[in-house]
Length: 293
Image (cartoon, rainbow, N blue to C red; front, side, top):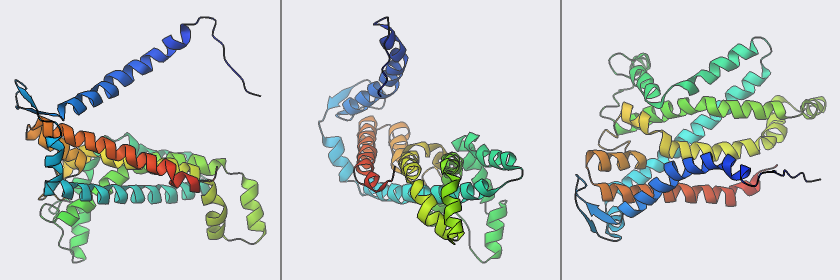
């Protein structure tokens, strides 16, 4: 039976919703409108004059080979971060779910990295991979790997992917662990009695029941890779070397705040927002059909 809530005061629901609506208007709707308006203008760096140019900023974007390369870099970066963060978190959650002694301490230690700021996370991995001082860099050099992300674009991309994924693993771990603990033990025990091994129990029972959680985390991690990794890239590589880690969100910053081309940067932000919205719609339209609720 459906339960409904009735308010004696007709204005109380609107008063309760007002703070969230105000925050959405101030921090999302208004900036999005300003970016859309600014993308149609050519402005001088000091904001003293502007000229309406229509869609010329967007046309210039798709004629720019560097912008198209930035799209490719963003696709590789977002897919790599999402896969690495999800797989690592799922493995840790499965192992943590099996721990009996000191389980609370073990889980707390795995959650801590989420409290680290993105820029700090980037600096940590930058020091670990530093060719002169880094422990991991020395280990790679002993294995015969010529490690120098300052000049090697592939190595720089690998470094920021690891840093970004490490920052997100704790968030994914919390949801995966909660999903695992919500699965009835009777199902797993029945499969074990029938002779199913751990791997078979996981792929035939546990993982299908985790698909709602996995689907949610896929959407969240893709959005994270597109937007929230700016601090990591800025602290670690600043988009280099030679633009090898210049993702779309970093290019918006670089062209707008460093290059002071405000209209061109605003057009990039509009396209970036459209890409993320389109990806989210596609995921909910097609991928969600394979989710078992």
